[in-house]
Image (tube, rainbow, N blue to C red; front, side, top):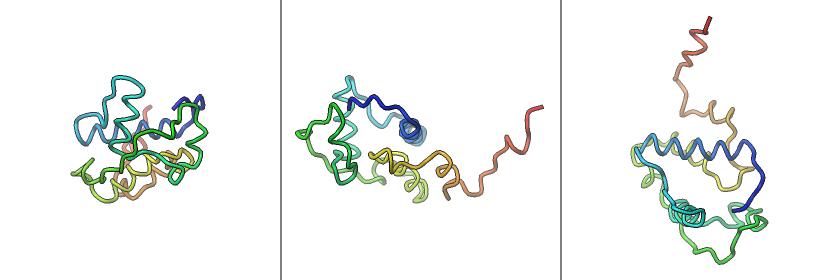
Length: 125
């Protein structure tokens, strides 16, 4: 929405979108323009508000008249994902970048418990 600030939370949002695409075999939303993309995101994740993103109204392209949508359930968005996966995914797609999971916290999430990091077991020589 017109923000010129780029930081790690933008990458985390992208990870969440890729996670969904890997699970469902298709992109979460496919907009043809920036405005269309936002509209489609809002239709799925709900329209952001000051309640879930306090500084959203400070964004250059924020429009208080954006059409209001309720978020779809995560079970509808990713029906085959377990509860801990849904919890992690929802943290990657928090509207407020300050509330989004960090990369380190995401990797330590219970969703990944029991998975082995083979790169550490077999370092490149």
